[in-house]
Image 1 (tube, one colour):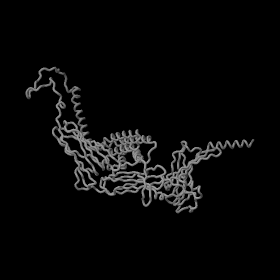
Image 2 (cartoon, one colour):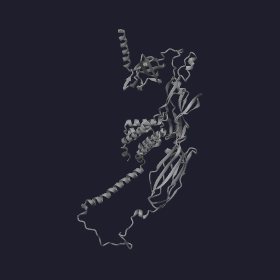
Image 3 (cartoon, one colour):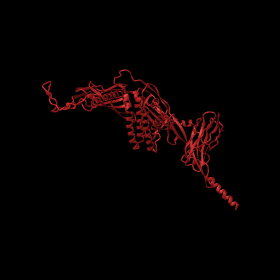
Image 4 (cartoon, helix red, strand yellow):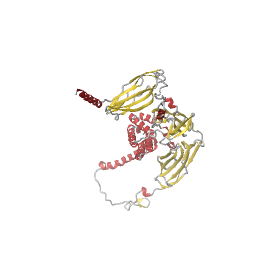
Length: 613
């Protein structure tokens, strides 16, 4: 009887223990004393009855160590006497950067609304190695160094030209060379910087297609990561910084020696190996940029380099005075289309002109080509036979190695006098009539009654006298402001920056609804960069995100807004390398964030207009 009670007590105790099994998060290391040449393993293990609720794992910084592999995750579950015990382990293979005593700081993880942290681990790093040479061990994992991976996987940047003229396009191609298996999606660590260049991203497939190439006597699988066309905006030796990429490499485990069964299970189908994260970094490119020839430079040359054609049209050649005329100009060809300024149009006396409307269509497949459309609005004020001189456009032809000037035909106009009805009201029978040449009939009868009182003391007199003066002052102020705006291109761009960005965001909204990720992120980039160019008065040829950030800081824009801007710009660039599965949600977030960024910048730099005016 007593024995049965003891058994029942022990059973209840075990059941109680399984119910209140505590959660724990611990750190472990395979050796607290290692040599600087040794690779060692650090593990962070969460243990409990249920690990499905584990989230937000955060690793230590490992600032004194090289991460050769990790985090490698493994899960273990045991059921002993109806008691469930589970664990999830995050492990790393590390190598020390220097000798000395160091601490591996705490890792953290969240479970059931609580945050768990491991205790720091002390480790001593000594010179040489503390481990004996164990060539006979068959269970030890193979030691894979960063150099081993680097010899078989790298990113190479190449330029189609090393010496170019100012404004001449240079195509830079980034290729991934690998003899290893890539485990999963790559991610961008750092994009290259194109200081001194205007950059145009060329169209490449979203999915990398590999081909075979031989480099340094070895055969590699090669895929194009990125292609960009660069237009130098300054002379001298310019540098393109490296493109940095994180590549998860799959490494097979060491083969076991023994019998035929081991050889069977060492087949790659059964042995998925482990993943090593490798940071690949391309080479730095150097490009020598020389100035354009300074002899025989046409007056109409404004920096265009390439090969172009010129077409023009006018909507009408017979027009009444004060009616608008539209002159359209199309510049097509290959070269720096976006950097071409609208040619100057010279008008005869008696014409008004307005800021031209400019649009462009750019083809980014292969070389940069396209068409820039320019529409001039002019208004003749004086009637008669008038001629608008030819419009000239000059560019530097790279094939001919000389300047070429294109020009339109002159435009002959017949400006007719305005009709009388448009200037003067028609006379009625009761109007005063002319008698002879200069004698007018004077009416002797009148129905006008004499009003009493002094006129200047009446409110109506001052209202009637003051209103035209106020209206005239308002019109003069508006005219001066409008003329100043039209004559100041910088101020005009400043004024229109938000409107243009808003129109681009509308286009992006339509692309979002169509779920066109690539075009959507491209349009968001254009909206942000175009807005910053106009608002901060940065020429296209000199624009870079770093320059925009610098000017925003000078304008006391909030750091959080600048951080959001950089994050959004980077996401738009990275999307091709890591397409989102939940693309619609991510696109909505980017769209709202971009709109908020523009609104916040508008608020912060509203005082800039005063300095421009």
